[in-house]
Length: 609
Image 1 (tube, rainbow, N blue to C red):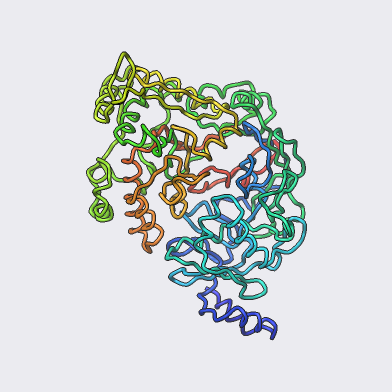
Image 2 (tube, helix red, strand yellow):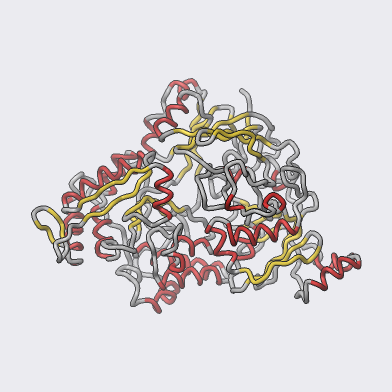
């Protein structure tokens, strides 16, 4: 590794810089500076690497591509909780101190920062900014901008930033281009999370709150694209900044190749697909295997104007399905939740929806080495869970598998099992209705976006099965604004959920499943999980220092979450499916994380043919 940055800086410092350093107080000796940092071990790419392994450094620049979103938007500030923002925005126009390689489980390389320093215990981290780093208006990125961004987003920003802010003991400059962040807890991932926090321009928000801006107050970023035009609720156009400061960085080689990126909004998925068939959109991601096989045979595909590309990956399944709100009855009873799982006829629904072409999610980390093992817990995993045995649900220690139907529409065996679980929970049938001991009917509401036609079809089949049990279900299909409001206010009994999980789960698991924020407005913990075992396993996985201990902690967490019966899982996405105009190209090898907002359009390019 190169010599210690801080020592070199101190040796060459002027008197003014020495005074600045002394005024900051006594600072412990730094670790060696490095070009990158990995959660475990060393970064795969050496200092001086020329490009990321999945980038084409010779990719040509140019071209204009159009993507489609369903719904609407009324904000262009992705860093606050207010409003609906195009989800692509934070990926295209903004940067962090370090950037992530998607070909490693969790490794960061310098982006706005040219180097990173952290001790073995990672109790603090120090970043040294690149002198050439610039905002899109040409002004330099300063240490003041970094400190302001951390403090402001932690205080006024979206809730996803606030949990991290509470773990910062101090943040202070250590030189004209360097800043050190010290943490107040033992958590080796915090240094990496700090490297991924967006850096915004302090001067833009002088004298006003970032949370109070209107749609015209688009945060100034440092990324390769800037908003060139927008029509509220209908479209946003991004153009590549010709003066982008980082275009020659090895980390950016072969990326951000298109001149223009445009997002068009449509009322629902059907309208979006029809627009794609008509040539109004350049590319779509398809998540339904049967639709991919049967509906992508329109004339443009037959002519070769549209290409169907499949992109494999090695990441966990994550969880996709319907979350049950355990904060309120009847889903506060695990036996009821088990009955809901038994009644969900996955085999028949999957055959109807996808032609049986997609495997079911069997646990939160299924499809990866981090998934819980079949059968009883391994000794190391059991040792982690044993202290919480009294709070664990059946199957956590001895083994648990999701119910499997017989593939028929009736699914009688599973419905009988569901009825038995409901009876154990005190529910009985009275004149065709399921009621509790006081005669109150079993009824609940599913909150659903109006544009979500796929989940609506799933619910059509599911509610028919629940009706046979005497359960009354109402599906509230609402517009985007109402959905966001009710989701944030936890105003639902059941709701669709999608949480993508990585090969390096860490602090974000607190936001997804931790009891600390289970009842907070805007929480990501939609089921309201409040499990001492889950909390302990999350703390374990962020504190361990070896890959083996990390895997054991994730296996244990997976058992707690899966056997908690919080979510009715549906199918997983083992391959990315992208249909696109033939001029859109991408290279090989592919990253281990496959497709995602970090891959298309970032590492694609335009090639006339």
